[in-house]
Length: 348
Image (tube, rainbow, N blue to C red; front, side, top):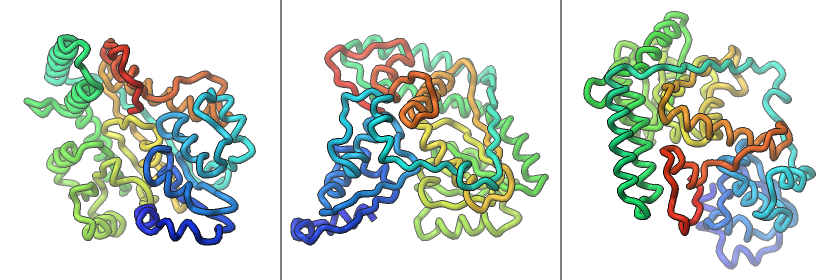
């Protein structure tokens, strides 16, 4: 793995005869040109370089630059626009989608659940947003991206559950959908970015005896959790965080995926969905994305769509001109704020 590579790739190892071929799997791990993983990978003596990844662009074109520093050093640079970058890497990219190579793979069916906040949620949201924006404006040039993120996260949590009453328009819809899912004998995965949200869902969905898989579950128990979800007909629901539901999990026996809240990065969402929609799936996978209208979630959803457009532009699937990911300025613009002029741009 990459951790052992960093540990074992000593100066003496770099003096060995070059490898004929070095292949990086999950090559998005080297997307950051400044981190030690990228630098160590690039230092391996080799004649040819391959990089395998399902997510070559997660946040912006810089991700692809980092990978190509390994694959073909000097081929691309940070001054290139997305279309020029796509042309430059064209002869070095062999792209195969699941739809191309797995013609018998059942489809993904997306249905967006656009919901109004409950009255209690709406009141709590409006108060938190107005007070939060006032505080940010009062900070003037001292406000940082961390301050803005704290407000964003607070508002997103209110979109899940009212902090005082526990009301939730999302849960009302989720509960109804799960009743249908369980009655039909299907299995479902529910994703959230917060363990706290999953804990609340576990309590409210206790009659379904859901399983949980997240960072607070000890590693020694995780396979046991997945095996229960896989084998136990009485366990129809798996509660999972995006981070825990990442690379290497095969849950193709689940037919329903619910994104209870949205991640910043479309590649992370796609990776989560693809835990169920992969080789071995025999039925369509229905994906429900929850979104509360008139809230920060709508604004974030717009940014997610722009990131998908960026990927399509670089790899030739779209003629639109996207914006390059979630920049520092875009985060501030969620509340019509402007960062200090002398602040450096910083990818989120």
